[in-house]
Length: 117
Image (cartoon, rainbow, N blue to C red):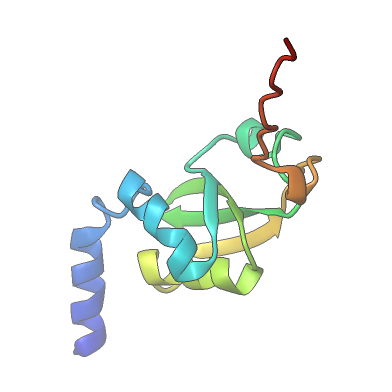
C-alpha cells in the first residue's frame, strides 16, 4: 500500500520536477559535489567539445519523455543527485561526455594585466 502511495505522490510532483531551478543549481555543488552544465539539452548541446573532459551525459526519462543533461562530478554523486530529485527508475544511463577542455582550466578567467605607464 505504501508503494502505491509513493507512486501517486511522485506522479503529482513530476510537473514540478522537470528541470533544475537556478536555486537548485546553486545548492547542488555543496550538497552533492556536482555541477549541472546543461539542463534538458539536445544531443548536440551535450556532445559539444566546449565543455570539460570530466563531464558526464545523463540520460533519464520522465513520463515517457527522454531528457539529456551534462554534469560534472563523480558518477556515484551524480546518480545520488538524480535519484534524490526524480526517484526510482528514472535514470537510464550515465555516459562519458565529449568535452575537450582541461578540467583544471574550465571556468578559469585570467587576471587583468595592468598597463605600464
